[in-house]
Length: 161
Image (cartoon, rainbow, N blue to C red):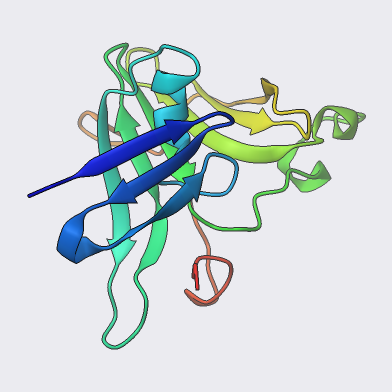
């Protein structure tokens, strides 16, 4: 198989996977490209990258998101939906809305101590952690609740075309 990846700055990935398709993915809009930004722009190994894709008959694939298992024992979830803006509903503390100005880049679970946080991307491109979430709760032996997703349908912000 002849795979080709070209990198430009700012991060645009041009990917050709032969029979699986080709296209351009931008780090601020695509769960496919955002994990690679950690490697190409930050020099941080994203670890094992797994894409969550639903393929329905005669429709375009739906990218739910991407999960990275980092060498530092963290799990990162990069959501694939388009409506990732942070707002006051994400915060439980008063006056925290001023910190919530960006879009969700990824949600982190530290597997060693079960701490969680949300990383945002600001309009300037800078990333920060505006929300440290409560520790993940155990749901079974060696299993912890990381985050939840509630959808009315797959058409809500996940379809790319």
